[in-house]
Length: 598
Image 1 (cartoon, rainbow, N blue to C red):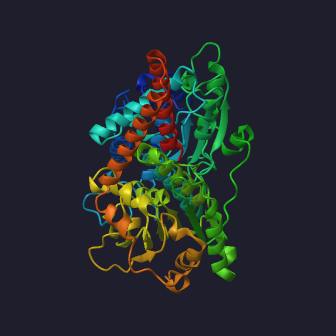
Image 2 (cartoon, rainbow, N blue to C red):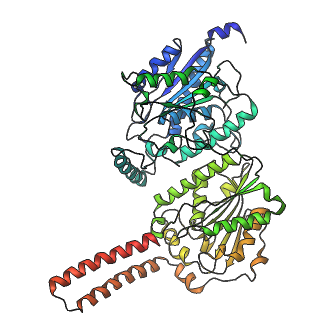
């Protein structure tokens, strides 16, 4: 390396503050950075992270990238290049620092960037290249970084739990009217920003491990973009983020974790505290300057057990997901049938049949409940991606299980599946599969949709919302998908005999297994194939509001019958009024239990 340039190289430290904080809150952190590198340039911007901020975190990161690009170009022009760049983030700032580094290191096949990071004139299929300064980033220091996002849980203090619960409700109300999420909701557990970051980080690290050595904390060592040493400081009494959300052993399995004594989520950055500041200072300076060997000696194991080592022998993984009013015991049986179909390839197959729990009808009709399950699915997807680095994924879904995948494909660009099977689908008929099947990098390679002869669940309930063009539910399991033209990528079976569970009975398992394993649809397994649907279900499905009116009327007249029976008992007026009121309360409770438990 040229000695003159080496002597003029500088250190740039980027400090990013937390949600509802300002750059001034990092004053004591800045003081320690100046002590470590007196000549370093410190970039500590004010972020649009106020309590009511509606900022998009990806747009925040795009702005940070633009400013660092400018600084790097200016330093290079003045022959005082940045030889060492360190990223430091607190809480939300830790997430932004990681995203900043991910985008700086360039796009990875299978983990596409969001549109804001792509040049407007760029070829859609072209990968975003790495920034010239990406290899200069020697380490990333995360202070109370909520790597999996926040969530309302028993780990929150009594003061914070109600505030965050009410805040979550407010975020849903704001989104209902504005169609945008407040900033705080974009970094909750399972949100698009969080999940995309986890997957992008995972694949970035995987690429770096194949293309170059790690920096190991030495700014002068050559390194591939994506291999910077990452150190996370964990507060000993974090009352804002659960331990399993602070620590991400999926995409953060190679982090160095250090404990910070007597520290919570917010005060972990108060290095000047006269009583406990010394412990925080020691941990931060260690993270800032210690070499890899010393950091490993000081590191802690942040959970009861480490994430399992990746299994590189697995080439195919199939997810089998149940739907509403179901706990998914049958999913294991279909998964076994698929593995049996694989035959001598069995050793290269793995299955994912986790359950998100019983999901009653009424919660299913509310989009925020369904979204929680989508986020759960993507958490499982990310873990599987880490566990099986060489595998392609397929998917079998029933009822709400079909919605989970359809919505995940829309929300998460990093989500991709090879073959997809839908049974009893509650996805809208107009769902556009071509956007995922077409292109140079298709995210889905084949779809098989079963349509039942008598699926009254889909015909009466999800189709009600499709009828009024509300939400994103529909009748693909009853009416099939609308295809503008014959599409080799989408196959539909019309029909399988039965109701909502018709396509997951044992007689159909071989058809499902054949499509997942070989991509073939062999209907000989379920002959004879019905040619028409149940007349009554089809007729009522033409106007689903009628069914809802009948159900409401039935509930009303049932109560009127109960009230009339009470009158016939001949009780005193006061007693009759009490019994009627008490019976009405019990009746409402019974209705509530039915719609929320069945």
